[in-house]
Image 1 (tube, helix red, strand yellow):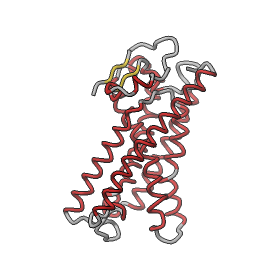
Image 2 (cartoon, one colour):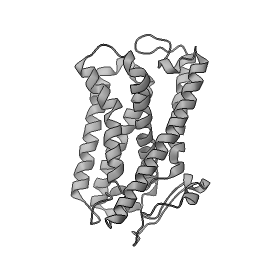
Image 3 (cartoon, helix red, strand yellow):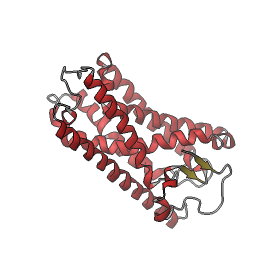
Length: 266
């Protein structure tokens, strides 16, 4: 997959969404945008740089960085924490927020160098959309089907429940409305591929006799391979959720650019 990004900041309304017929073309799976600067700035800032946006980026990175560190310390459990999709997504969430802050910092120091690193933009774009979409999927699956399985009320456990399964949705939804970077309708394929990798891991882990942190033979009750019908329904349902949430988030991008156009911030 290629990334095609201009190396100079274009004039005019560079952030206009693609027409629907363009979005539905296979080429939209690629990473094409004519203004690399948009990945390091806010939709709502006036100048090329914003110290307020930079400060916000580091606050977001600290929230998830501290959360991930504490989460791993408390629930590492000889590495079994990493058998859960939740942990995979929380690591991705922390990574995305950290590299977002780091890249905006470098952008503030040397704009021209940063916008020429197209492989970094490609990597960040994939991470961002995968993280954003799966934050919704994980939250939906957890609060709708797995929350009641958890132990009796415990303040620390409940706090991390919200931190891991709630905050990513809330804070990255806000972030999605603050950033200037584009969205593509067909990019649901990237969170879908991420989930397929996890599914392959869970199959291998199960075949090797792996147990969860409580000694159960399945990682999630909805991914119990002794019940293939339930697993099939889970896979199909998760795929549909990815498409639905990714499309919904694309819709939020359209709303953001509409508002920006009205406020002359496009």
